[in-house]
Image (cartoon, rainbow, N blue to C red; front, side, top):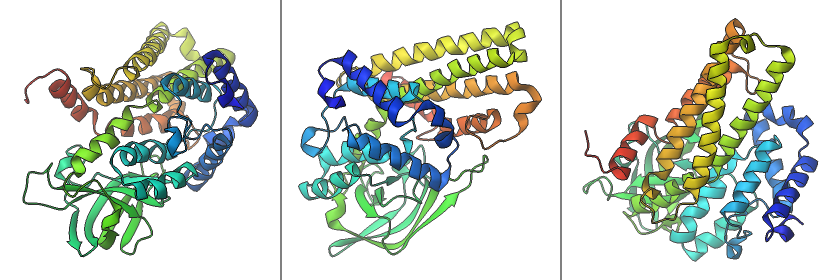
Length: 387
């Protein structure tokens, strides 16, 4: 068993590497790299089921909640080897495996933990109902209204950009319960079952043809008070635990996958004698991107090891988010120029130049635009005044 080697990091890495190659052979990578929509859901569910069999589905969770209690170094090793092995991703389960426990463990009731954490560990897929058409980066301005009616909240409103909401069974939902107080103070945090009457999900079609985002329309949706996380009107405080979980090792996984992509991209270019290899300017740009990505990987390692009371903690998610999405956009911008006219076709194949280029712009907006993130870094991290 892999977990038998947890006290020896070198042996643990070798065990994870061997298991990854045997379970998800690199020669099959094209099968999951091209999967979209429902197919992608099934691929990633399969991958998480396989990880669950060897105790690697919830490695970072506390043992008392069904996890392995592994530390940061173990998580980094896992994400490193998963990326290097071209294994299926697990981004569809980011909210389930990271946001849900980060919220419920410190703030949820014992009944909520006993009900939802085992289900998540077993593969339940959750979504997040935070952003609204008029409350994206300014999340505290949300308008979705919840009115208390005996032992239920009656909720009306709309959420947008909810990842994988069309496949989810539960939703982490922020609602406004007191519109008379300051916007940060009148928010409440609820758990919503997605099959509740009055919940309607409409997929949002992207320019690349995919639909992994959805709009959630809520009409007189009744949510039990027992599904409230924390006290009424403390939702903003609770949500900070959710948002802080985005600092996690997944950022390292993205950087590792970009690194492996660049290595494979260069090897393929050499094999095919790609024309850009004879262009000194493009060669320099490629090496610059490669070097910056190496630097980013190391920076993420350092930042992830920062203690919770470090001065950089409050701006950590913003720092990582801006750095990785900006660099990812530049990588695919380079590919467009290197490929020339052939890059102009929006091929749905995984990693096709134009497809990935367009997708990279969405990443700079998702989770809070990079412009807003830079403001947070300046104000919270550097102590600069609002402009």
